[in-house]
Length: 269
Ligand SMILES: [Zn+2]
Image 1 (cartoon, rainbow, N blue to C red):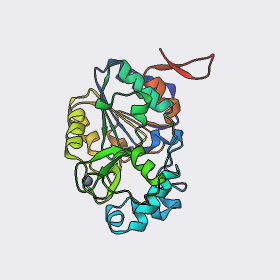
Image 2 (image 1 turned 45 degrees about the horizontal axis):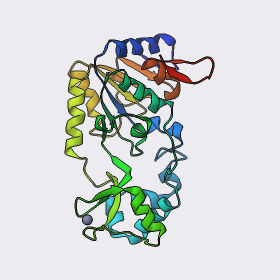
Image 3 (image 1 turned 90 degrees about the vertical axis):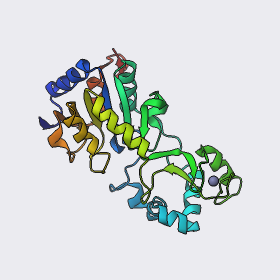
Image 4 (image 1 turned 30 degrees about the horizontal axis):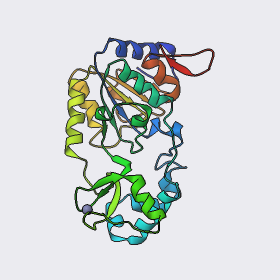
């Protein structure tokens, strides 16, 4: 089933699949965070479209080779330019509701904003396949720390803070272009796709390999697949239910939240 807009019957069908499922694996992408004010990367208002230096900072080769790229990146973070104060939105809260119902198997996310954890999802259920901008990692040793510690050093005058343990280059703990995904993250994602009764994708065009292959894995393993995205995705043909709609509108009722007439907000049943 595919539609533009959301007939109530499709939402009901998706909700019924979730209600019947014992375990639901979820894969999220940039679309769930745009309502929090985080731009996507490549759209007309995208971060990289407007700031080519930011795109170079996301490529490990430029980041390592060019101190100017690193300094501009640290300066932007210290200025709060890179989503310092964003908050989770109703889409994130809906997935917390799914966990509170005891149905969340694993929450795989391609986002690097930690908004799922900040909304209240358990960190141990979240797999950040592209890492996180909220932490820093040394490119030479195993050192990791909170991003805020490094930003404090930049604000105190260091233009390109080095690893306090080994002197190596520090970078946000994201997977940059040119770096490979963490094999344990990929393994956990595959396990989730194999084990869950329902595989729900939210706000992702399912165009990025290899994580988009989890949809095919889930389908082969017998899961029902629900795809929710603003636009058509590359895997719509694998969806048992495909919804092209705003996440804020469609996701809360799918996971069993209902609108509150008094507040206009959406609250759990
Ligand atoms: Zn180090």
